Image 1 (cartoon, one colour):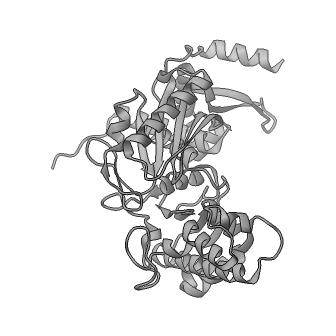
Image 2 (tube, helix red, strand yellow):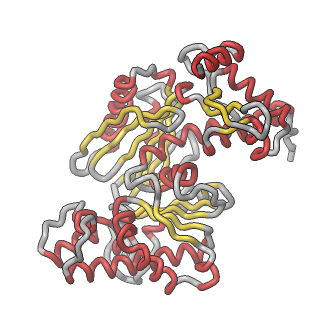
Image 3 (cartoon, one colour):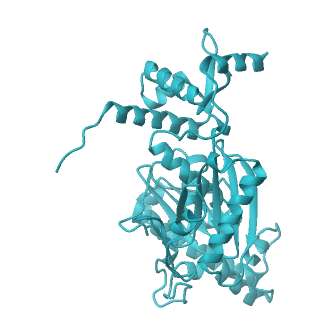
Length: 417
């Protein structure tokens, strides 16, 4: 087998990727800090940063004092160099959001879905939302580096485009990537929603700094993003992380996927809300679980019993993840996951400790997501950035021409006075 030789260009691309990744994840840093964190020489850092400033991709953004010397310039990825869009395809609605490269949300569009929406209808809503957020922000489509879409189910990334398989929504081999590509020139990235949120939490939230972690999402659906040695684990066919469809009770309750005893059938927001409705006599609305847990007062006994059972199943499911993957961190998120965790995190930890092996449990921390319950769209918006960073940089956009280094320094000098 022929081995491809590493070229100088390959090394340069890898070094650029390392610097950009550090700036994107770590925020403003000086050239010296970047040299320390990337292990690149100061000459390499200065040359590559200068090149990216000339491109308009990186900019100086303030000063930091040094020990007895001149203040050092802080650097960041230029927020307005380009834009990314992200979408959350949920059970009842589609949400599309637009971000700059500082991951500040600029605009958002929401669309309600009818019963059993067809893939063509959802594709139409996604493209309509993309057009709407771009137009509202006053951004040209050519300035959008990519459109990430988070969906329920397994996303097969092989072949010509992303293909979605979701038994719970009735999608069997839907070529969503191709369908979206046909309607927009913006590059398309499709991913499982839990994996998208997991990437965002690893970059900006409760997973930062961990090399081995599992980010779990508990909403109507239940899923997980497994990170091993800093990389998302997808498995042989992109289906790793379907935690909600692992069996927790043999021959148990019927799950939406058609199997019996799945974890989702015991902790998913829809089934828990239905049990709460039966126990309390309240309408079985999708938000019943989060609404009952949002108050400070004690739960009525019937509701408390349902919640205690749910917490027990959730802790046992987390214990399975600890025994299987031995992560440094378990991060609990999703609307139902955060609602349960904010009130019952000690009980969830206790259930996990009772069901996990002692040694791996003692080395695992169980935390709550930091980015909020509805972060699928934000996580999806990071998908284009991850691909571009891996390739060593971002494409030149059709925005304003970048300033030269000398002009950039003059601009900064005027802004400081």
